[in-house]
Length: 605
Image (cartoon, rainbow, N blue to C red; front, side, top):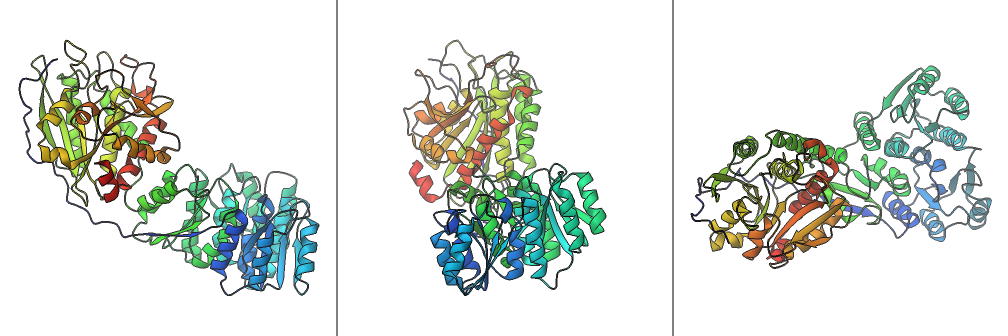
């Protein structure tokens, strides 16, 4: 076995970085949920109307079109939106109507949406109540009928109406809280024969200003012009996707209805019921709706929360964990502490590092790439240290090290090797890992977490000697230079290596040292929305820089996407790297660090 003949030289004795930032204020999660969409609607109703309500807006829980306009009506009536099975009156919903003491029930949609049997049951069990069906032959007609009832229930109406596509629920739901707060009608429209009837209804009801929801794919520019022609004026609230549109609606609600970000609402964007029935509660609280897929909090929403973090005291969560999973809730809390992982910045690092060409250990290209890493870290305020690494051929390289102090002195170490195997420019192997580490260093630079986080770019990982064991020089020499006390501080190490291409995301190790880091990462797999299967390194030699740490008993793991068909070839260029793979790894590690508490650190050791 090749042995290094000289100990590594620490050029800078201290690795500590920027001053510890203030910990973000604690935010709370206030959840309204039941075991179904019907009981969730009831939980929301009880929160919004603890003392009862004179009226109820009732819609089918099976489909969304007829119910979309109901939030504005509910706001005008001072009523909750409840859901029922379309064929029979849902017993728990009836019980809530009784609790509310409602004397009026407005049923949305025709018999195909809410059957005549449901209406008959209401008449029978509520003989003194007025039961009114608001429906038309199409979703567009129903929305227009509901809009007319909204105007009738609001004598002080300002002449403004919301208009959204009838082909999807996202844009109309985003406007639900502000429609409820301002007691405004909402119309559905599309480029079809029904549009004429909708335009006629806008005219007959005296709409003087239309707020069009969604971009041209939802409501075309030509159709907006037709709307403006009958209303006099219009404006559009839109973004690049449903999440950007929701943020545009939130900004409008701030300006027009006094909404704040004190306790925004979180609801799944993958299904309609919870956001639909939660609109009245959010309208009461002057809180915007932030939709999110179950797979993970969208970057747009996360960035908006980070920008408004000083204002957010918590979240109103609509629905249980099947609707808004635990990891999404935690991501929302994390968004108040650190920016989200920016894949565009990470990919810019991939391109910059790859542009140096093949980075043979100890060569000019590797040295320039290490200089680049050090400059980036210094630019974010880190104190950067380097460690000389001796190579078998007499050349030297160096490790680059920076640290962000946490509330605890216990360390999580994240790093990847900077060198590549000639003739490869090494985009996936391993500019992708270094780029991920750099982006994590950026987003964590101005925040804090329980663990202290150490970032490293390792030198000379690739085989560069006479035997198959002549590799991992940077990480091995770093581990050898650590005192027993310094080793004990490192509670987890992750080698971020080849995370830019592949179909399977693995967490790996030699299987000889503590496997707690592997287990901890797997427990956070929800952050990538998929399984994180374990894959053992074959043979006696570790295949990445986790090896040296694992062999001395430090909990270590290697994150890698596989397989890569251009491994160690000239085709491993920046264009080969898949941004979605890098992003998944970055999101996982960001969540792992920010979600790591004292108990988690103790469990690693």
